[in-house]
Image (cartoon, rainbow, N blue to C red):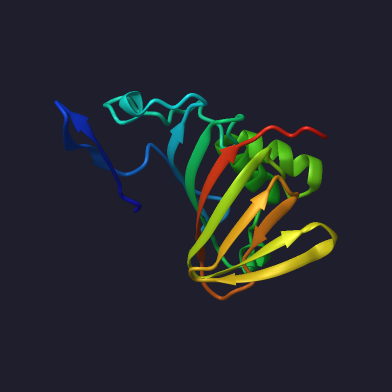
Length: 181
Protein backbone atom coordinates (compact mmCIF):
# COMPACT_ATOMS: atom_id res chain seq x y z
CA UNK A 1 0.00 0.00 0.00
CA UNK A 2 1.20 3.50 -0.83
CA UNK A 3 2.24 5.67 2.12
CA UNK A 4 1.63 9.43 2.09
CA UNK A 5 3.55 11.61 4.54
CA UNK A 6 2.40 15.24 4.73
CA UNK A 7 4.80 17.70 6.35
CA UNK A 8 3.58 21.14 7.38
CA UNK A 9 4.18 23.83 9.95
CA UNK A 10 2.95 24.51 13.44
CA UNK A 11 4.26 27.42 15.46
CA UNK A 12 6.84 28.07 12.74
CA UNK A 13 8.34 24.57 12.91
CA UNK A 14 8.15 21.68 10.47
CA UNK A 15 5.96 18.83 11.70
CA UNK A 16 4.33 15.71 10.31
CA UNK A 17 0.67 16.56 9.69
CA UNK A 18 -0.29 13.04 8.62
CA UNK A 19 1.34 9.70 7.85
CA UNK A 20 -1.03 7.20 6.26
CA UNK A 21 -2.31 5.94 2.93
CA UNK A 22 -3.85 8.46 0.53
CA UNK A 23 -7.55 9.06 1.23
CA UNK A 24 -8.65 8.04 -2.29
CA UNK A 25 -7.06 4.69 -3.06
CA UNK A 26 -8.84 1.98 -5.02
CA UNK A 27 -7.86 -1.57 -5.97
CA UNK A 28 -10.07 -2.54 -8.90
CA UNK A 29 -12.15 -5.69 -8.47
CA UNK A 30 -13.10 -6.00 -12.14
CA UNK A 31 -9.63 -5.17 -13.48
CA UNK A 32 -7.31 -7.35 -11.41
CA UNK A 33 -3.97 -5.68 -10.73
CA UNK A 34 -5.18 -2.15 -11.49
CA UNK A 35 -5.15 0.46 -8.75
CA UNK A 36 -4.94 4.19 -8.34
CA UNK A 37 -4.37 6.68 -5.56
CA UNK A 38 -5.28 10.36 -5.58
CA UNK A 39 -2.51 11.60 -3.33
CA UNK A 40 -2.90 15.38 -3.24
CA UNK A 41 -4.89 18.24 -4.68
CA UNK A 42 -4.30 21.98 -4.62
CA UNK A 43 -6.87 24.69 -5.34
CA UNK A 44 -6.57 27.42 -7.95
CA UNK A 45 -5.28 30.07 -5.55
CA UNK A 46 -3.02 27.89 -3.46
CA UNK A 47 -1.98 29.32 -0.12
CA UNK A 48 0.91 27.51 1.56
CA UNK A 49 -0.38 28.19 5.06
CA UNK A 50 -3.78 26.67 4.21
CA UNK A 51 -2.34 23.82 2.14
CA UNK A 52 -0.13 22.33 4.82
CA UNK A 53 -2.56 22.21 7.74
CA UNK A 54 -4.74 19.47 9.18
CA UNK A 55 -7.34 20.01 6.43
CA UNK A 56 -7.52 17.10 3.95
CA UNK A 57 -7.45 18.45 0.37
CA UNK A 58 -8.65 15.19 -1.21
CA UNK A 59 -12.32 14.34 -0.73
CA UNK A 60 -14.77 12.01 -2.45
CA UNK A 61 -15.79 14.97 -4.63
CA UNK A 62 -12.25 15.77 -5.81
CA UNK A 63 -12.09 15.19 -9.56
CA UNK A 64 -9.17 13.49 -11.29
CA UNK A 65 -8.89 16.27 -13.87
CA UNK A 66 -7.99 19.62 -12.30
CA UNK A 67 -9.69 22.90 -13.19
CA UNK A 68 -7.45 25.71 -14.48
CA UNK A 69 -4.84 26.57 -11.84
CA UNK A 70 -5.52 23.46 -9.74
CA UNK A 71 -3.20 20.46 -9.44
CA UNK A 72 -3.59 16.74 -8.85
CA UNK A 73 -0.93 14.24 -7.81
CA UNK A 74 -1.82 10.58 -8.34
CA UNK A 75 -0.41 7.18 -9.09
CA UNK A 76 -1.81 4.53 -11.39
CA UNK A 77 -0.84 0.87 -11.57
CA UNK A 78 -1.76 -0.80 -14.84
CA UNK A 79 -1.74 -4.60 -15.10
CA UNK A 80 -0.46 -6.32 -18.25
CA UNK A 81 -3.06 -6.08 -21.02
CA UNK A 82 -3.76 -9.81 -20.80
CA UNK A 83 -6.26 -9.15 -17.94
CA UNK A 84 -8.97 -8.44 -20.53
CA UNK A 85 -8.45 -11.90 -22.05
CA UNK A 86 -9.06 -13.78 -18.80
CA UNK A 87 -12.08 -16.03 -18.46
CA UNK A 88 -14.90 -14.26 -16.67
CA UNK A 89 -13.79 -10.74 -17.58
CA UNK A 90 -16.85 -8.49 -17.59
CA UNK A 91 -16.19 -5.27 -19.56
CA UNK A 92 -19.47 -3.69 -18.40
CA UNK A 93 -18.60 -4.22 -14.73
CA UNK A 94 -15.08 -2.87 -15.33
CA UNK A 95 -16.49 0.21 -17.06
CA UNK A 96 -18.96 0.80 -14.23
CA UNK A 97 -16.19 0.54 -11.65
CA UNK A 98 -14.03 3.07 -13.53
CA UNK A 99 -17.03 5.41 -13.85
CA UNK A 100 -17.68 5.18 -10.10
CA UNK A 101 -14.04 5.86 -9.18
CA UNK A 102 -13.07 8.39 -11.87
CA UNK A 103 -16.25 9.79 -13.46
CA UNK A 104 -14.49 12.61 -15.34
CA UNK A 105 -12.01 10.13 -16.82
CA UNK A 106 -14.84 7.78 -17.81
CA UNK A 107 -16.67 10.65 -19.54
CA UNK A 108 -13.54 11.35 -21.58
CA UNK A 109 -13.25 7.63 -22.48
CA UNK A 110 -16.78 7.79 -23.88
CA UNK A 111 -15.70 10.65 -26.17
CA UNK A 112 -12.45 9.15 -27.47
CA UNK A 113 -12.77 5.41 -26.80
CA UNK A 114 -10.87 3.72 -23.96
CA UNK A 115 -7.99 4.01 -23.17
CA UNK A 116 -7.90 7.39 -24.96
CA UNK A 117 -8.87 10.48 -23.02
CA UNK A 118 -8.07 14.18 -22.85
CA UNK A 119 -7.99 16.72 -20.07
CA UNK A 120 -7.36 20.44 -20.07
CA UNK A 121 -4.09 20.08 -18.21
CA UNK A 122 -0.33 19.90 -18.52
CA UNK A 123 0.63 16.44 -17.25
CA UNK A 124 3.97 15.20 -16.00
CA UNK A 125 4.20 11.41 -15.87
CA UNK A 126 7.07 9.34 -14.45
CA UNK A 127 7.18 5.58 -14.87
CA UNK A 128 8.12 4.34 -11.40
CA UNK A 129 8.12 0.63 -12.15
CA UNK A 130 7.54 -1.67 -15.10
CA UNK A 131 6.93 -0.68 -18.69
CA UNK A 132 3.99 1.33 -20.03
CA UNK A 133 3.02 2.44 -23.51
CA UNK A 134 1.74 5.94 -24.22
CA UNK A 135 -0.88 5.73 -26.97
CA UNK A 136 -1.68 8.82 -29.04
CA UNK A 137 -4.14 9.39 -31.87
CA UNK A 138 -3.59 7.45 -35.12
CA UNK A 139 -2.23 4.60 -32.95
CA UNK A 140 1.12 6.33 -32.34
CA UNK A 141 2.79 4.38 -29.52
CA UNK A 142 5.79 5.19 -27.34
CA UNK A 143 7.09 2.55 -24.92
CA UNK A 144 8.38 3.91 -21.63
CA UNK A 145 10.43 2.14 -19.01
CA UNK A 146 11.29 2.79 -15.38
CA UNK A 147 12.28 6.44 -14.78
CA UNK A 148 11.20 7.62 -18.25
CA UNK A 149 9.24 10.87 -18.16
CA UNK A 150 6.43 12.21 -20.35
CA UNK A 151 5.21 15.78 -20.55
CA UNK A 152 1.90 16.05 -22.34
CA UNK A 153 -0.19 19.15 -22.88
CA UNK A 154 -3.86 18.40 -23.30
CA UNK A 155 -3.40 15.79 -26.02
CA UNK A 156 -5.71 12.88 -26.68
CA UNK A 157 -3.76 10.00 -25.16
CA UNK A 158 -4.01 6.77 -23.21
CA UNK A 159 -1.90 4.20 -21.41
CA UNK A 160 -1.58 0.46 -21.97
CA UNK A 161 0.74 -2.17 -20.59
CA UNK A 162 2.06 -4.64 -23.17
CA UNK A 163 4.66 -5.86 -20.69
CA UNK A 164 4.61 -8.95 -18.54
CA UNK A 165 4.23 -7.28 -15.14
CA UNK A 166 2.34 -4.31 -13.70
CA UNK A 167 3.47 -0.78 -14.51
CA UNK A 168 3.19 2.02 -11.96
CA UNK A 169 3.15 5.64 -13.11
CA UNK A 170 3.14 8.83 -11.00
CA UNK A 171 1.29 11.81 -12.47
CA UNK A 172 1.18 15.51 -11.65
CA UNK A 173 -1.61 17.30 -13.52
CA UNK A 174 -1.80 21.09 -13.66
CA UNK A 175 -5.14 22.43 -14.86
CA UNK A 176 -4.92 24.79 -17.82
CA UNK A 177 -7.29 26.69 -20.06
CA UNK A 178 -7.87 25.50 -23.60
CA UNK A 179 -8.31 28.52 -25.88
CA UNK A 180 -9.38 26.51 -28.97
CA UNK A 181 -11.66 23.55 -28.39
